[in-house]
Image (cartoon, rainbow, N blue to C red; front, side, top):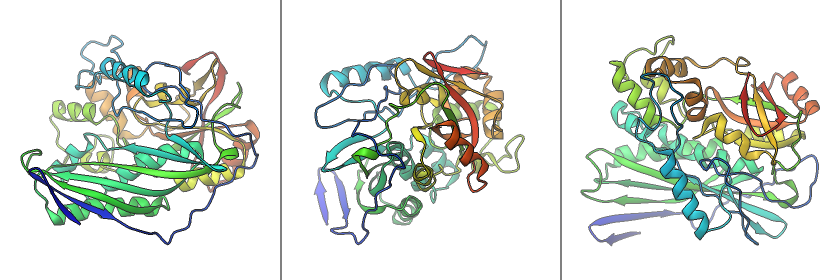
Length: 394
């Protein structure tokens, strides 16, 4: 259906029904119904507030850290992302809508919980415009939401997207939505519908914006909430494909000052910078649900904006932190180039990028050994849970 709204045009794309029936992931050990325990991604440990019937998620797609003193080194704030402003907005929203802070928002429904997440792909879109690579940006869009909701143990059910542009280029839009379809197939969820908004004079010629949201479901007694995590539990890292969809304001600043273009070869790599930076975000849904089914999973952190430093502690009970073995995996060449070219401090890198690990699973020792011995999984032991809050790197 097409409706004229103000100076623009909106096209709704909605499927009335879906033949796909949801299946329910099961945890090996039943637990009492609980709500995920997490602190806000950007607030530096603001306590999570709980509402009586819902658990809400409010995450700003913005992150950065203060400079740690290296002369001339770039920071996320230098690239235009103000962490202090983001934290202040979160505080104000928390006063109006208690219950924010998790990776996904939970809504009770019978003996289950619906889990919802929403996101965009940020300024990675700018690189899509420059490189002309539009076929995979939709995968990024789906990944950012479904990877968030699977941290609660939820199986994604459906996804909806929003595509906005100044002038509708049908061929380009088809490429973008094809990527969204691919992302939904990878995460085994239904593309239920979406919205196409054509808004003249609002976007530059050839540019567009994307957002979307996913809804999943999990049994209340199978919610992954982190409450049973204890010191000595193991941190298992699942590899990323590269930068994924966070930190691109800083990436673009580094690329601009490097004198290189996206067509040039990645220093230390075998592909171009454009190919390395536009690699689609890994969708971890099937792998994570499979790991959960094996038992022993206590908490899951999606490593997006905020990197290791801000995201891993979100799944821990109060008083616990993480020790990360920084040499336990190979950091991809693209991160080494970003850091060297931008003269970026280690602390800044670890709070901005995933550094090659896109998802962290907290497991007991026995379960972690089973996973690491099973060559079916591409995983590595990257650290452990320790007493004392924060993240330490060894």
